[in-house]
Length: 348
Image 1 (tube, rainbow, N blue to C red):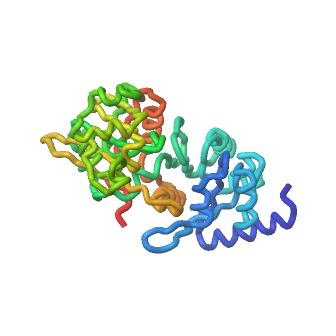
Image 2 (cartoon, one colour):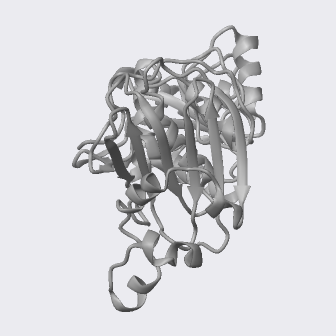
Image 3 (tube, rainbow, N blue to C red):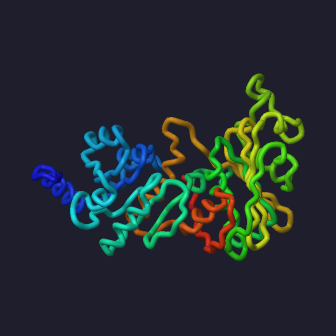
């Protein structure tokens, strides 16, 4: 219940935020998400600490959310609708962060109130929203080693991605942000074949691209762990020995491109990409996953979300994540879009 004290606190805070132009956001979640602290506390960015938005309401999150609310001065509401309306009668926030379920309830509020605000979905996305939407993984926006971007309009002949840690969605998003820059723009996926076990080693994908991707890894396992010797995982036979439960996605695009995402837990601990373009040139890079506890690579995605809340413009088409979510589910999707010409990964 919104009593006089709560009302005065809320209106005073709202007036202060209106003067500074700081965007007010709500967080809709199941369990308390780590990304919430990126917006509550802030994050390191370009050599300084950045706290660009103000969290004013939350739904879900349990005891941790209640503790954060007491510490940071926002309210936890019992329903999604009350959260987005901050206990009032109409939509009262400038943006929404959705983690887990809750997107459908947010859309209901938008439709009822006749107004929509930008939405950041932390993870896969299976439905479109009539509002600026940002979704997906932090890998497309983290630093790259080396710092490369495939030229727009590249004639890509084949691509391979190596991922780990059960983070299939992250690996699929990473390869998609690279291959979407090919000639003809993105037209969707015709079919997805999911492979597991020994069949992965027998599957049809360019071994030279797997070797190129692995060459970018800073975490080859096996002998290097025990005595520091370097090794060629492809030629030594170590790859098959180390990756005891391999899996893969063979993604056949509607324009004929075939890309392979290999999940090789036990062989490496990072995410690496390689592609061959017409003429034979091979491009390869590592998507940098910085160490815990700060995990600053995730701040790259929080920064993109903050800029969307500020400008009302999503930095890349949400169709990318709709497509990668379909691939994760093992199905094709007739999703068309044009990749952003400007590179979105971190360079600073």
